[in-house]
Length: 157
Image 1 (cartoon, rainbow, N blue to C red):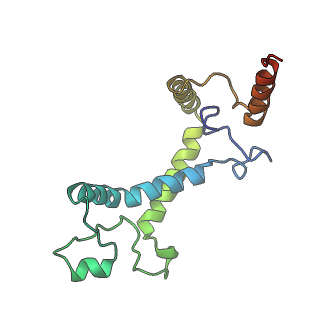
Image 2 (image 1 turned 60 degrees about the vertical axis):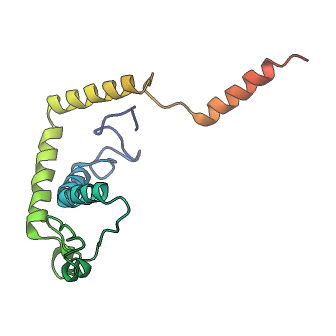
Image 3 (image 1 turned 30 degrees about the vertical axis):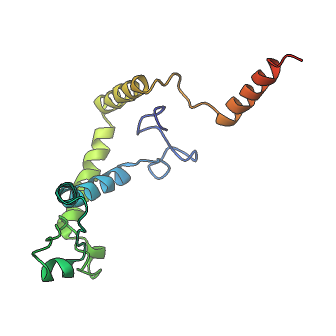
C-alpha cells in the first residue's frame, strides 16, 4: 500500500466491503479518537522530556498525586487508566460519541469525488517526494534473482 494506493483502495483481497478494507471508516475513526484522546498527554510528556532530558516522568496517577512536586502526569481526554472497565471499557461516553461522529463523517467524506481526488494528489506527491515510479511495488525476490543473473552474466571466464 505504501506509496502505491490511496486509503480507499487496499483490501485483504477477499472483496470490497468495508470489512475487507484495510482502512475502513471505523478504523480511521478509531485512530482519530485515539490521537485526540492522547494528544495533549503526549505533547506535555514531550515538552517535559525536552526540559528534563535525564529526568524520569511519573506515569502512575498515584505517584503524580502523592508527589506533585516532581511531575503531575497529564491526563487523557476521555480515558482514565485508574477508572477501571466498569462502563464502556474505560472510555468516557464523550469519547464514544466522538468516535460515532468521526465514523459518520468518514463514511460520507469517502463517497465524494473531492475525497478521492485529494487522496490521489497526496499519493502522487508522496511518490514524487520518495522517487517512486510505477503503480506497484517491485518484487524484491525477483529483483534479487535478476541481480544475481546480471552479476553472473557479467563474469569474464
